[in-house]
Amino acid sequence: MMPPETELWNRVEQTAREVFGTYGFGEIRPPIIESTELFARAVGGETDIVSKEMYGFPKKLEILRRATTDLVGQVDTPAKIHVFGQALAVLVLNLGQALEGAVIPTTQTNRHLVEQLKEISGRTIARWRAGQWEPSQQWTNDFETARALIDELEIERLEESSSLRPEATASVCRAYIEHNMQQLPAPVKLYYTGPMFRRERPQKGRYRQFYQIGAEVLGGSDAPGIDAEVIEMVMVYFAKLELPGVQLEINSIGCRDCRPKYVELLRAELQKVKDRLGTDSQRRIETNPLRVLDSKLEHEQAIIETLPRIGEHLCADCAKHYAEVKRQLGMRGVAYKETWRLVRGLDYYMRTTFEITARGLGSQNAVCGGGRYDGLIELLGGPPTKGIGFAIGEDRVILSLLEAGKGNAAEGRDVYIAWMGEKAQATAIAAARTLREAGFRVAMPPVEQKFGKALGQADKLGARYALILGEDEVASGEWTLKTLADGSQKKIAKAELVKFLREAKRDSSLRSE
Ligand code: HAM
Image (cartoon, rainbow, N blue to C red):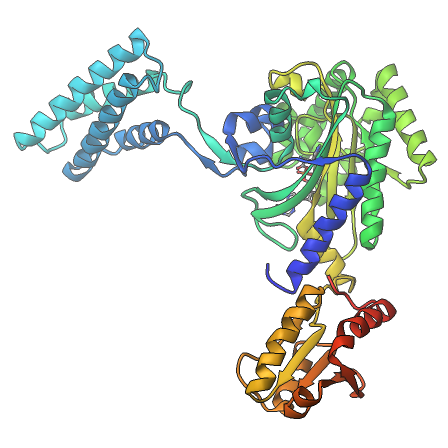
C-alpha cells in the first residue's frame, strides 16, 4: 500500500470512525499477537481458520520435542544417530532448565521423566566418545525408550504458545473480561481496525495479511433491535462510501437448545448421501456438519438443496427473535435476502448471522461478515454476556471502490511554487510556509528551475495553481497565479493570496485539508 491508494484507505477508515461514532462506538486497539488457545476456544479448534490458517509461534519445548521424536524412526546411519543424539541432548538441557524455572509443571512424573532422559542422553554421549556410531539394537532401544518418555512429558500447561490474530472478536471479548467492562454502562460498543493473518491460498481479494474494520456490541441484552441497528450501521457506512452492488444476506442459526437437535438431524441426513459428497464434506459430517452447507463444490449443490433447513427447526424463542430482527430491518429500510445456508465459518455464532457482498470482486465477494455470539464471553471465563458484531474486509472494500471508479482519492497539490533567483527563493520559502499553515498542499522545487520546466512539473503533480515568483514579482509584491487547467493567469497581491485560494476552494471544493 502506498500513495495515492493510501489516501483511499484513510478515507475508508475515517468514514468508519465517523459513522460508527454516530452510533456510539468507541475504538479499541487489541494486540496483534494473542495466545493460540484464545482463538482455539473462541473461533473453534475444528474450524479452518484455527486448524489450518493460523500463524503460530509454537512453544520452544514443543518444537524441540517434536523435532526429537520425529528423528527417532530415522536412526539407521551413524550420521543420523549423531543428529538424534544432539537433538536429545538439547532437549534434555532445555527440559532441565524449564523444570528449574518452573516453566513446565514441576510434578514428580516430570522430574522422573527428565531424570531418565538425562541418563539416556548421558549414555549416548558416552558411546559417541567411545566411537560407537554404528546402528545397533542398543541405540534403537535407547531411542525408542527416549521417545516414549518424551511423549509422556507434560509440558503444555505453562508454556504459552501465541499466534498472529486471524480475527479480532476473540481479542475484544478477552479485553472485555480482563478490563471488567461489564461494569461499564451497557451495551459496550467497540470498533477496531487493523491487520489480521490467515494462511489461505492467496487470490484476488484473499490475502494472508488483510485488514478488517470490525465492531462489537457487548452487554446484557440480546434485543433484536441491537442486531438490526448494527446491520443498519454497516449498511449506512457502505452507502456513505458509495460501495457498488451492496447486498445483505441474513440467517438465523438457532441457539444452544435448538441447533444441536438440528445438527443431529442434518448429520443423519448427510450420512444418507455421504457417498455422493466430496472428501471435505464427508469429514465435516463428523466434525462440523453445518459447514457442509458452505460447500462451493458444483456437484454437491443439488444434494445440499434437499437437506433439512435450520429455519424450519428453530425453537420458539429463536424463531421469534429472527422474525423481530427482520421486522426491525424493515423498519429501518434495510433491504435483505434470507439465505438458509449462511452458517459462517466460526464456531461462536448463534441466532443472527449475516454477510454482505459487493460488486467487482469475483469469487471473494464478501465484504462483511458477522453475527450474534451470546455465550462466547462465558466460554472465555467471563460473566454471562450477549454479543453481536461484524468485520468488514477492508482490502475488498478498496478493491470494489477502485473497480467502480470511486477510488479517486489521488489528491494533487493545490499550489506549485515556481521560483527563479535567490530573492525569489526566500519569498517562495516564506510563501510555502504561509500556504501550508493555511492547510494548502504545496510543492516547490528545491533547486532553481526554468519556469517552463517548473510548470511541467506542476502539471505532473496535478497541481491546481502555479504561483510564479520571478525578480519582477518579488520587487513589485504582485505575484502571478496561473490556473493550470485553463492556462489563465492573474496578478495577485501577496496579502490576498490565502484569501483568494480559500474562496476558490469553497467554490470548486478544492480540498485544503
Ligand atoms: P470473517 O467472515 O472470517 O468474520 O471475516 C470478515 C471479513 O473479512 C470477510 O467477509 C472478508 O471481507 C474479510 N476477510 C476474511 N479473510 C480474508 C482474507 N484472507 N483476505 C481478505 N479479506 C478477508 C470474522 O472475522 C468475524 N470476526 C466477524 C465478526 C465480528 N463476527 C462477529 N463480530
